[in-house]
Image (cartoon, rainbow, N blue to C red):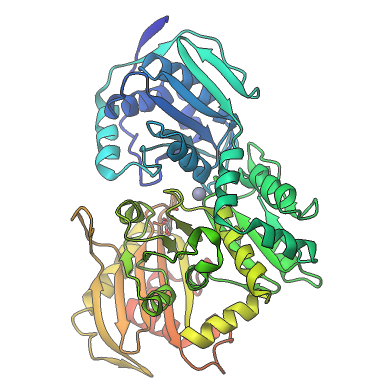
Length: 543
Ligand code: G1P
Ligand code: ZN
């Protein structure tokens, strides 16, 4: 093997967040930037001789070039084999599936999730550990520390491999297997859900529209929904992954998935609409003229889990992030299983799943998943809904109405105030924090404050403590207002306000969330001084 050691000047800005290192494409194109980070990962993880690595990405601009570089570096750093998705493609949940199925020594996933792609867009890279989940903070901190001091990286001199040809090739002395990126994941889905029942549902005229947003889930959705489940060609829209996602913002929410939203709220809408993000881990599901909040989606999946063969034996427990509504808690209580409330971010679910404490987990930010992998999983959530619909033979709206009639409705909305000046956002948070001393017992119209706190979490598995996770104001009837600063925004500060009110009266449950929450919205402003401090009349995004 012809290994070269190349000098590099360390970069100071390679701190991976919970979702890996994300930067503008131009930053990743700087000489040695990618190589420096990859070497820092390889130096940190203690590679067993001859180990196998999983490698793939969401197909965005720079994906293919980065994969060729990483293959040469993996060969020079002692890996014996790499499994790489054909065309350089692996969705985030599929990468997690491949890592677990072939017991590889983790994987490198190239993605900036829902951030725009293309030469002007973002690129990203993250290391997932052998359990298939994102590396915990102690590993990402060590990678960052290493990235700041290393002075050279190792790479073999070898030609590019043919990423489009499946089968075995070699880089230096290392074996590279180009694998079908969809097959293993599709098999896993088929083992969890009742494909025969879904096929029958679709054959009976049930119509669906899956918007892949020109991102990674196109080939997965076409294979599973159209080929294996028989949905008519064209049920998957925007199904060809493009390096710039067609210029769009591949984030499945009411704002960015507007093409799908327009279809679902038009005459002749299909029975189910769904979308996924850049790397395939987020999901949004819609009924005909009807939006299912991610919090409700988690609760409905939990309440109906045993309808899916992979969950027929019941679930061990549920975990939800703190800002996610308590709808799932009510289901957990009825099922007699534990419900964990974790800080925002998927990484907190991994420990609980590895310890067998939970089966299902979800976040209000369009993330739902289970212990079948260690990432949230967009298409999995859609298939779960299809499985439920195939068994219950009701509309999505009817399923929700029935659910609320049994459990009550946790009316829910998130208001985002994006790109605020940092000092304004901090001022709003400070005002809320300062009010904590006087709020308990205070009445606002029909609502009386019970407690307020800055959420902190002690991991029940490893005992680690996370503080400062969001300001909670909890009212006596269980309604809540949560103020939290985003950890992923890129411009100024993003303030998120999460609003939740419990509605037990079936006659009022089907009302519009913004109307049902109007009083809480006004209370949030009164406590935080948001309008006066920001000079803004309304949020930039309402979910
Ligand atoms: C956002 C979401 C959070 C999710 C994260 C990564 O983080 O709110 O639930 O885990 O993206 O996808 P935030 O910007 O709120 O820190
Ligand atoms: Zn994502």
